[in-house]
Amino acid sequence: MKEVAVSDRNPRGLPQCLLSAQEAIHLPEVQEMLHRLAAYRLGIYMPHMHDAQSGTFLPLADEVTQVESGLQVSFQPSAAIAKEADRYLPVGWVWRDGAPATSAVCEMVREEQAGNAGRYGRYDKHKMARGN
Image 1 (tube, rainbow, N blue to C red):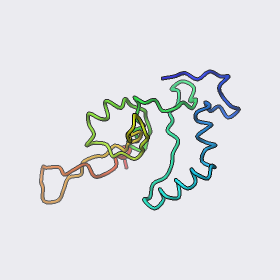
Image 2 (tube, one colour):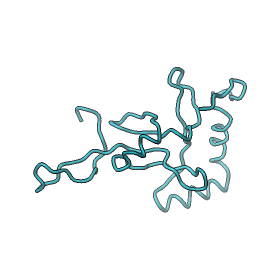
Image 3 (cartoon, rainbow, N blue to C red):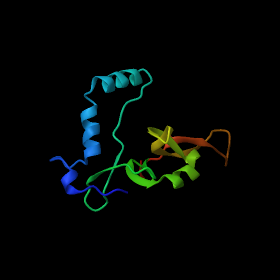
Image 4 (cartoon, rainbow, N blue to C red):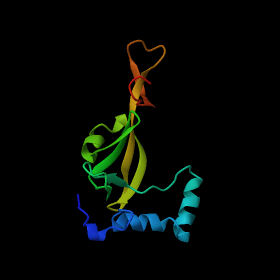
């Protein structure tokens, strides 16, 4: 993961690449893309992660996927997520190496299906925090 020098940051603490993303949402061509995506119930997000010690904003590393599980967000190696792809529902994508790539997922859980005693159906419910 590329460390961003303090001199590369703006007063809000964003690395320049993320500051550019924040500013781009106001461009007419980006607004048009957002309008077109809305027809598919899609939006735009700024792929990012945070430094574990300081909480500083960082660009989402190519080898990292943002994971929502039990209503908590973590950042996990993309290779590990890919090995259990049926367990995760992709919810965010980026363009990488000439193709769409998953950048954010929600962890799903199996729900026992009525009439299938002892057998589980597909992963079809979002994993919730314990006690919910």
